[in-house]
Image (cartoon, rainbow, N blue to C red; front, side, top):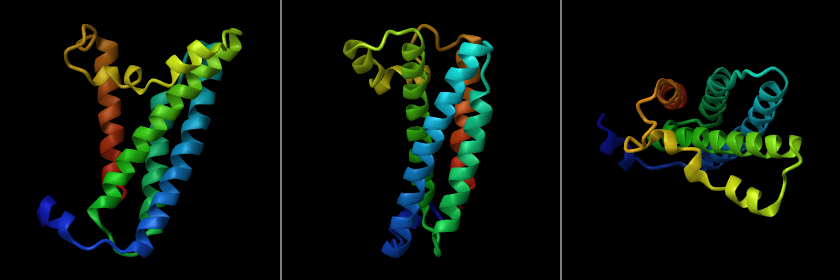
Amino acid sequence: MKWIDQMKLPIHKDDLMPVIRQGIFMSFTGGLLIGALHAFFTFQFGFSLTWLLLFILAHLTATRIRRSYNEYHILYSILSIFFFLLAYYLMSITLNLGVLFLYDALVPSFIIQVLNPLQYFKFINPFSSQFYSVDNMLELLFFLIGTYYAYRYSK
């Protein structure tokens, strides 16, 4: 069945609310936990396991979403991708606020800058000067794999 035809199918409201609740729960808890772990590992040891933890988060989010509905709709896979993006955003905020806290630099102007979502997704912009760097390409690759993973396993 085509993508457009799948979008025309009716959505069962009894299935939609549990999907939204599970997605919000997983994106908030996972994003905050991964961000805190990333800040801790970066500050203490100088390395991070962020993308491994994001793959685990994508898997757990997709699995919980898959278990929360009775009849599949393509909207649930799209919501899974949205909640993965929200978890990535919350992870980045938690990481930056944690670093600012560790360096005693928590001031309101920095906190407002930390909340800007454009700075966390700038690695997707093909017109940026650092788009073709090796680090950015690896980050983009893992981000796309995580997004695909969240979409595929929520079916």
